[in-house]
Amino acid sequence: MKGLLKRFSSKNRKQRLTVFHKLLLVMVLAALLLFSKGAYMQGKAYLAQQLLTFAWARHQQDGELYKAWPWADSAPFAQLTINEQEPLIILSGATGSNLAFAPAWMVSSAAFNQGANSVLVGHNDTHFKQLEDLPPASYITIKTYPQLQMSYQVVATKIVNEKDLSVLENSGFETITLITCYPFDADIINSDLRFVVIAKRVQQKETGV
Image 1 (cartoon, helix red, strand yellow):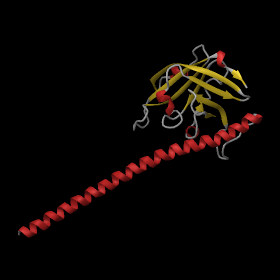
Image 2 (cartoon, one colour; image 1 turned 120 degrees about the horizontal axis):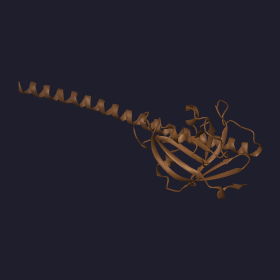
Image 3 (cartoon, helix red, strand yellow; image 1 turned 90 degrees about the vertical axis):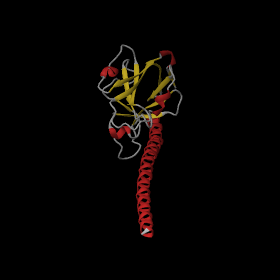
Image 4 (tube, helix red, strand yellow; image 1 turned 30 degrees about the horizontal axis):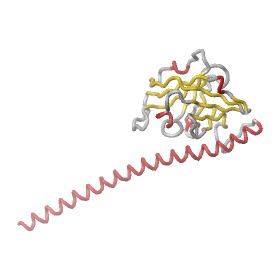
């Protein structure tokens, strides 16, 4: 009888271990899937910027718009530099497909160098990740064809609800507004919060090359 109970206990223990191992395997696979997805998004964003940079260089030579790849929805529109970090190419039109590859200019906002509010949108886990630790009074630079460079200085950052459209309005000054999802580094999907950076044009910083 004792031997039977011992074998029964051993069998149950093995079954528990088997279930534990299965759960552990599922958890590991889920973690790898999340990691690979994140790595894929990072790699995709980086590679796209390299291809867009080549197309941008051609645009600067003759003013023609060149798509970075044949099936692209948009061609490079301008170049953005945030606080002297690696320059980013901007696409025209804040669509889902454009934002997967680059920050995008919201076409309903003012064009650059028009004396109003130009709005740029980007993902907080790729191109606009750097906004999380942006120091106060940082400089933001925009370059457009033909070699016009405009500088802006950050005057405010704030967190707003996605339904707050006041950040899209003109303030009476020439500004650039950068918008991304909030919070950063969170597992929240489809958050209704937005992190907003507002920078005012610095006229004396403008240079023509």
